[in-house]
Image (tube, rainbow, N blue to C red; front, side, top):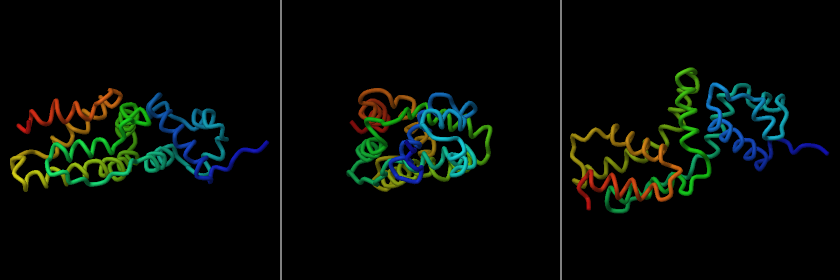
Amino acid sequence: MGRTPLDTPARQQEVFSTVLDVLAEVGYARFNMDLVASRARASKASLYQRWPTKVRLIMDALKANLPDLPQPDEGTFAEDVRQILRSWGEPVPFDIAGIFLGLLEGSRQDADLACLREEYVDRAYTEQLQVAVDRAKIRGELPERLDAGILITALISTFVLRSEEQGVVDGIVDGLLRPLIGDL
């Protein structure tokens, strides 16, 4: 009985899901093709043939699993943020905190991973929030002097670190953001 080729979409998604699970579980330093091959029931040689480095395999898995990131305009900054965070995946299909911690760990060790993470992952998430911040400043909801980068980092970090919690999005918006910006 032969294995399904890695170039079929379903098989690739199976491998990519395994990659993200392994990264979240063991981190970047201990991530290796042997673990992925074993758990995905694939040969290590076939993985290396398609993805010559673990960086490429991890990045392809991340790109294939980025959620659809629409740009909502709900009329208020708080509601824009609520819709943005929901689009990131509630319920979350993967261990987001583990994946991001693995990426951060790996980015300290591997410059290629850091560049690819910034280009494909960080930009996708920060651009969406930056548009919402810029719109909120124009509407007068946020002060012009607000450091958007720090606010965006705080929103992303809180979401990532609490992503396993039920109702995390509403908690961030109603328990943190609305009181912070005075939007009750």
